[in-house]
Length: 116
Image (cartoon, rainbow, N blue to C red):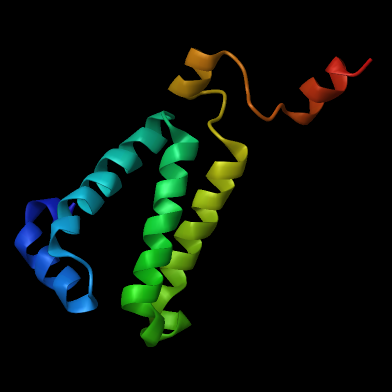
C-alpha cells in the first residue's frame, strides 16, 4: 500500500535501482489489486505469474547484494507461494471455481473415480 499512498517516494527508489519511475503506480496496483484477487480467488494463476515476475525483478534489482538473511529471503518465500498457487490454482471456495465449476487439475480422489 505505501507504493500507492506516496508514489513520489517509490518513484525515487525505482530511479535509484534503475527502474523507470513510472513503474511505481502499476507495481503498486499489482500488489494491491493482485493481493485482493488472490484473496477472493479470481485470476489466481495469472496474478501468481505476475507476482513471480515482480519478485524476481525485486530480488535481482534491489536485494541480491544484501544477501539471503535480511535481504531476499522474504522474496524467495513469496516466489515459492506464488509458484504453489500457480500449480494448484484456486481452491474449491474461490469465486473462480464457482464460475468455472471445474478444476483445471483434478484432486486425487476425483481423478481415481474418473478412471475406467
